[in-house]
Image 1 (tube, rainbow, N blue to C red):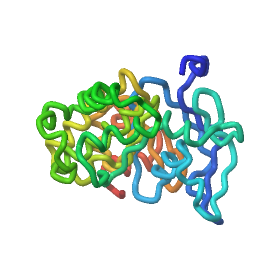
Image 2 (image 1 turned 30 degrees about the vertical axis):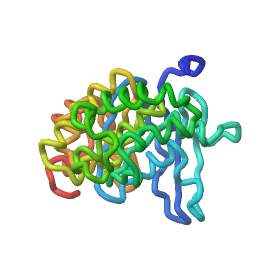
Image 3 (image 1 turned 45 degrees about the vertical axis):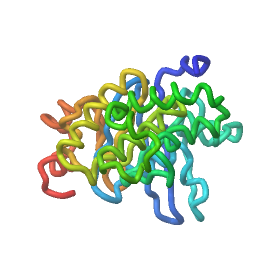
Image 4 (image 1 turned 180 degrees about the vertical axis):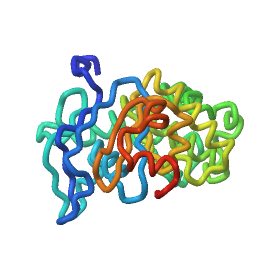
Amino acid sequence: MDEHKTAQHKIEAIHFTFSYGETPALKSLNLKIERNSLFTIMGPTGSGKTTFLKALNRLNDRVEGASLSGKLLLDGMDVYDHAVDVASLRRRVGMVFALPTPLPMTIYDNVAYGPRQKGVKPRELDTLVEQALEAAALFEEVKDRMTSSAHNLSGGQLQRLSLARVLAVEPEVILLDEPTSGLDPLSTLRIEELLRELAQAYTVVLVTHNPQQAARIQGETAFFYSGELVEAGPARRIFTNPKDKRTEDYITGRFG
């Protein structure tokens, strides 16, 4: 959406706090993410990483007792502003979860489902589905079995299918919550390579509990701990010269 691109950063959190009941999951978060970049958030379980992703496309809206303060901006507009259409927001900000859950239908229909909901005409679907599968580096592997069940795919293929489903609705931001946690090393490296490529055209935010993954991916990295942003910066600097001892302890495996 060109009219939004006057904002300096694609995503910006300003003193953003998110709580479940009395428990703050994010504490006065200040964070900036550039457009068309691959940004990695690392941290142990319970550090607020997933809460941040879900806040970005309002998946926490129906959590009873949830509350927030501060601002969370997408292209300069607060995603919690009353004027924001949540359905439109979720098309702009897609999400891939740790456990791929394909719809009980064919490979083709899994990818076509979102565009159909948007009203894309049938004659345009074939091209859109192929482009999404190509972008997710899956098309060559499935082009001859598009009408077979998605449940026949391997774990790595299912995760790339999940990514293709997100890409098919043409988002601006792709959020990934531990997308390689259940994958073998080869599939993991393939996903990481794919994310680097996608970051040339999308803003990609990856959450991981694995500091080695953040180090491999490079780019900008943030370390969350107990709901706080401990530090953020270029991965090379974070891993060679962390400013906070908690970061050093985490990346050297003393906890996590």
